Image (tube, rainbow, N blue to C red; front, side, top):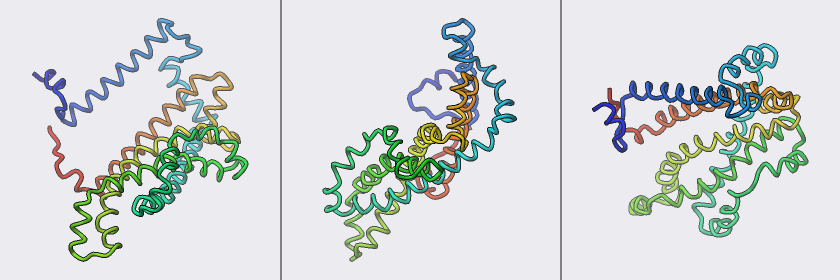
Length: 270
């Protein structure tokens, strides 16, 4: 009966059961990874074994300053997505709320999502140089192209019923914006920001490939790949995944803290 419940559509599971399944899933993936290498389905020079990846961490820590480089990349990411939010949210409200701006920029915004940011690396180097400012601007722009259209979309999703309800109370423009649009949009956009922030960890490899001597996990990946240390590359990627996962959990905690009403129906099952 227990196993049958795990295959019931959309059935919630207890936190304890969830943790057990997560550990089991990690073990299964690790076993498949080990089997692929052990039976030479992929050459070990192209795909290192899990144990080889784990064994590379002491060297990464002692010789390659893994902690310092990770902290450097994390700093760039935080500044980059804070800058992206500072640009996207106010601009998105202006475009989404006022028909003149919405119609003027509708087509460019729809096309913006298809902009290949990696192709613009040279442009950003020409504009901002090769140091931290260039990397931050590049990371911010990589998030803006996705976040800005999302903010506009979230504004359009706000039900007109709420707007008309506030208007019946003789509310002017600003109370409508502050009491209806800002709470409704921010509660959804915060989730969007949490998802889109992961994009900055994708682009950090590109950004830190420029002037790799400055450090960061991206430059570490670039240097390790040139040295054919694939075990180090995979270890660094695992670090990026771990940092991103922790960052995601922090966002989820903040979401519950700032918007508790979104979780009022949640009940943990033991």
